[in-house]
Image 1: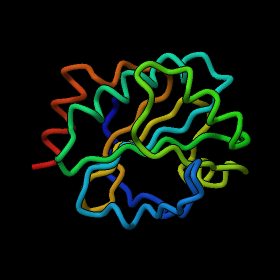
Image 2: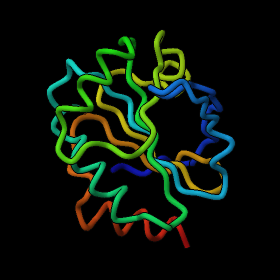
Image 3: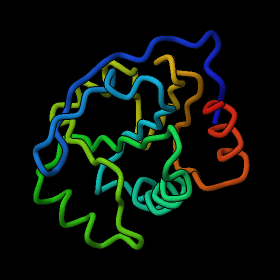
Length: 146
């Protein structure tokens, strides 16, 4: 991931997950948040999703959360895709139906991922697919959680 210098405040948003539950970014203050913009039709998005789940699972009980924001697809399409993944994601999958949150973050292509510190500042970003359970990303997340 590339450092965002200077760090900037993440745009707040409220989106519903695939079960209809609302999630507000501001409610995750005090935790490190990985925000991933993706879509089911995007091959690099599909490829990186299991590594995001492995990172998330390895951080259980720590002040870390993943929010995966699907871009413009139906609940049924996203739900069907989630069932195809191994391991299946246990983090919140949110629906950014009109890509309004993506626009607020300045997303130009997907996948795009932003790392937000405990104070709500975007401190790192990545454009394109990654292996999110790598030692380098784990180290970065651990450092931000301290």
